[in-house]
Length: 430
Image: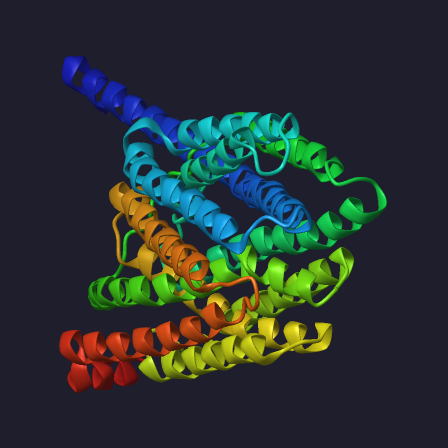
């Protein structure tokens, strides 16, 4: 039997060790429980945010189109919107790494609600209308990089795919709902009525953020084989994330034309607002279908042939918009193009998450979103410069050329940075 001070000290130390172990286990359980609650809440916040933003954009551009605002003015307004969003993305991402992701996103929801409320007081085409419109772009740039970084806590590749699949489904359903609801409410209730719905969605997103936490669950220790795979994946992801910057630039270059100039072309063809909303919603459904297919068939990472196929479809869709004159033609063309947007965006989320550490995810996603916005700036400016009162079609043909040029550049980067050797290694790992 052990007696004396040494035995008492050993027993005391053992008790303290057990208490500390139980306390740490309790903290880990609480952290995991909070994350299980927070992640679905972040999905809902993403739905609300895009529902509010796209409802606002759809109705605002429709108001300007119905008021016969020039295509040049709409293009330059879109450029200002995306330029402000790009700058906000580059700042909010790294800022959220230091201040906390929930705090930064909450500030963005407050700005969005205030900006939409401001536009209700303004007539279309006035300076106040344009300032409020641009402020929504600022808010969106502040909100999203922190949310995407907060979601990037999954460790394995498949876990990352699943996390961002649900994220993409959430915000894209928000977009689709906004496009359908926007056209219906605009036509049957009143042109300004959708703004009140958007304000409610933005405020609800802010309230939800108050109840969210920054997910930071401890990561399980990896085996030696997994660490080797993770290092290889991380290197390739860093290369492909930069390749995706080119893809995102050209994709959003084209998408900005669909957002800001397609309404003018559709009004020119005497297509109703609710039909316009349905066309856009169908394109969004195709984007969602692309996300799901990429998740179910995860053979696309680091494979350049998928990049070639999707960019070819995107260029075909833009040529279709250029030559269409009916609602059916516009709808089919937008749907074909939307596969490119789905492939680019889902891939960029995967590469940004797996190619960055948890301490720098905000910065990685901020840069990813910034290249999207800079592409939209270029598309909006060029669209405004090339469009005329007789035809709004030429910018879509130019956009198809930009997509093809981007594909060539991506293939050159891939060949230089990775080449045949890395491609063979990826095939062996698969």
